[in-house]
Image 1 (spheres, chains in turn green, yellow):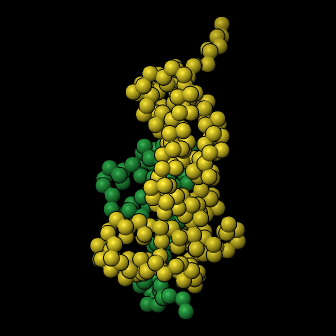
Image 2 (cartoon, chains in turn red, brown; image 1 turned 120 degrees about the vertical axis):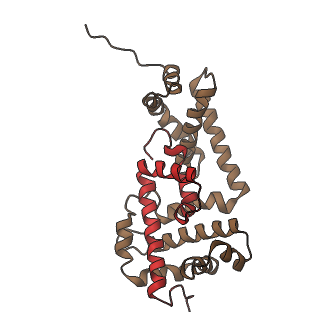
Image 3 (cartoon, rainbow over the protein chains, first blue to last red; image 1 turned 135 degrees about the vertical axis):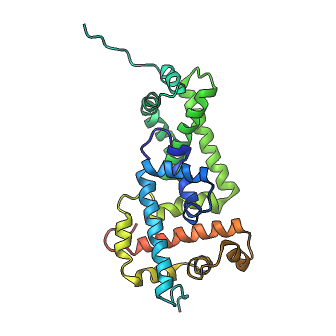
Length: 74
Length: 195
């Protein structure tokens, strides 16, 4: 986080805490806007948001292609 | 004839900040960042916690500068930092699995690691066995909420009902399970992805 004032008035830890809600569409317009403003100028949060959504995207893709995905280890 | 403008005082920088001059606040932060970070790092458990305290401190200072008459800047800043540390500790006491582990879970998942890039994860996940291994490495409770929500695609309410918890509790559990899954994937990244 290189900005002087935490962008969007949010700290990185707050973005991290709300990342799931953000990706699930569970936030208000104002909350989304604050996160988007933060992520636009915060390389750490941009990168980690990308990692997080990449893994979730791959997981959801797995559901469509592998009926055994998520099976408990034997 | 050239003149050398004297460095503005802290009070002048704050006054300009109050009038909306972010560059002035930037100069103010640059002037105090090292000392405050040293203080926060000595009293926090790790770099992420210290950075969080630092961000909280400057955010509160930015807000507070509008409302307060600051007479002695350094004591004022360190008092704000001290309160930020106290708030961080209180969050841990109140909700140890929420506040405490979210930071450490984030770190384990690669938050703050410049080498943990989406491209690197995407490339590694081309190998489907990697995601399966990461899922299998989760404990039962984490895997359960991920299977219900992500693979079976139950709604949030439905997942909460199955688990017998409130919607908020389910969301918290899901978020932490997702972070642990990312951490398990990260552990399995080829070359240099482990910690």
